[in-house]
Length: 306
Length: 300
Image 1 (spheres, rainbow over the protein chains, first blue to last red):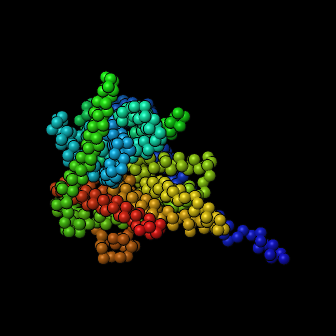
Image 2: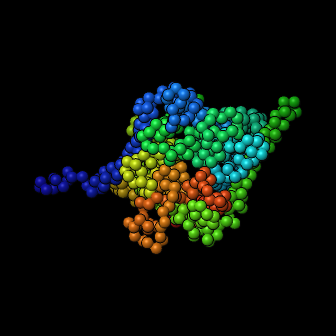
Image 3: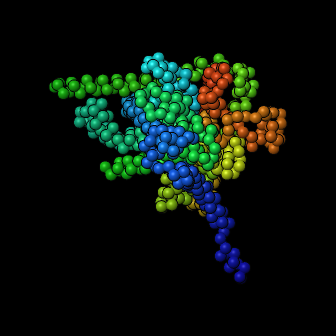
C-alpha cells in the first residue's frame, strides 16, 4: 500500500523531464546574462583604474586633447586627454548617419510604398549583401579607392573623418534601411487609404502621413545605425589615419576611440598607465553603446504614447 | 485644376523621381563595390594562392592557413554557440512569462548584441587570453566569436520558435504530452527551416568578423602541418591551442602594418575569396531554408 502511495506521490517521468528541460534552458539564458554583466564589469574595473589607481582626473580625460599617456607632460603629469578620440568618434558617426539616413529612408519607402512586390524582391538581396560584406573589406576598399580619391579632390593625405564617414555610410545603410522597412510596414493600411481618398498625392501621403506615423521607428533605426557606426573598429581604423589629434578639417588624419584601441592595445603592457588609459577608452565606448540602447528604449516608449 | 493641385502634382512627380534616383544610387554603390572587389580580386585567386602559406616579407604568399583557420574557428564557434542559443531561445519563447526577470534578460541580450565587437574582443583578451591563460589561440577566438554570435542567434531562435503557430502546442498538450516533449518533438522540428537559415546567416556574419579576433585568436599562425592529425601536437593543424590568424584579420593586418610588397594584390584576392564564401553562405541559407521548409510542410 505504502509503495503505491509513494509511486503516486512521486513526480512522473514526464514531469521530471519537464523540470530538467526548463532548468537547462534557464541555465543557457543565465549564461548570457552573466556574460553581459561580466563584460560590463570587467571593462568598467579596468577602465576606471586610470582614475582610481593613476589619479587622472575624469574632467581632464574628457576635455583635454593631449594624448600621450606614456610620457610626462609639461606639468609633470602624464597626458591623458581623450577629447580628440571622442570628437572624432562622434564626428564620423554623425556624418555617416547624416549621409545614410536619406538613402535608407528612400530605399525603405521605395520597397514598401512604391514598388511593393517586384522592387522589394529585387532590393532585398542588395540589402542582405551589403550586410554580408565584412568590415575589413569595406576598410580595404576605403583604403585603396576612397582615400586616394579624397586626396586628389581635397588635397592633404585623404585619411580622416570624411573617409571614415563614407565607409561607415555604406556599412550602416542596410541596418537603417531594414529597420525603417519594419517600421513602415507597421503603419496600418487604412492610413494610406484615408489619405489617398482625401485626394492627397502619393508623395503627400508618404511625406505627411506614413513617414510621420513611422517617425519613432525611423529614429530608432537611425540610433541603431549610429550605435553600429560608433563601435565599428577595423574599417575606420584603416582609413582614419590614426593620429590622436583633434580633427581640424574633414581630411586631416585623426583617430577614433575604436581605432586608437585597435592600433595601440598590442603595444602597451597590462597594468601600466598607457594600458589603463586605453581601457578607459573602451569604457567610454561601452557607456556610449549602453546610452544608445537607452535612447532606443526611450524613443520606443514615446512612440507608444501617440 | 487649381494652382495648388498643380503644385502638389509637380512635387509628387519630383519626389518620386528623387526616391527612385536614390534607390538607383544605392544599387549602383553595391554593384560598384562587388564589381570592384571581384574584378580586382579574382585574377589573383589561383590554386597556388589558395593552397600556399602566406609570406611575412616576400611577395607571392598565399592564404591557405588563413582560409583554414577561418573555417576551423567558424565551426568551433557554431558548435559551442548553437546549443546555448537554442536553450536560451527555448526559454525565452516557451517558458518565460512576462516578469522583471524576463525583461531584464531581454535587455541584457539587447545590450550584448549592441556592444561593439572590439569591446567583446578586449573582454576576451582580458578574460580568456590572460585570466584563463588560453593565450592567443583558436579556442580563445572561438569563445570571443561565440560572445558576438550568441545574442543574434538567440534572438533568431526565439523568433523561429515563436513563429510556430500556437495550435501546434495546444495539439501536443491535448495529446497529453508534457511541455518539454511538446517542445522537443513538435515545436523544434516545425521551426527547423527558420533555425537552419538563422545559423547559416550567423555563420556568414562571423566568418568576416575580425575585430573580436585580433586580440583573441592572434595575428599570426605558426608553422603547421596538414598531415599531423593529432590535435594535441603543437604543429598539428587541428590543435585548438595554437594562435590562428583568420582571413579577415589577415586583410586588416596587411593593410595596417604589412610590409609585404604585394599587400594590395593579396588583400584584393583575399577580399574576393571572403566575399565569394559569404555569397555562397547566403545562397546556401536560402536553399537549405527552402529545402527544409518543403520537406517539413510536404508541399512540392
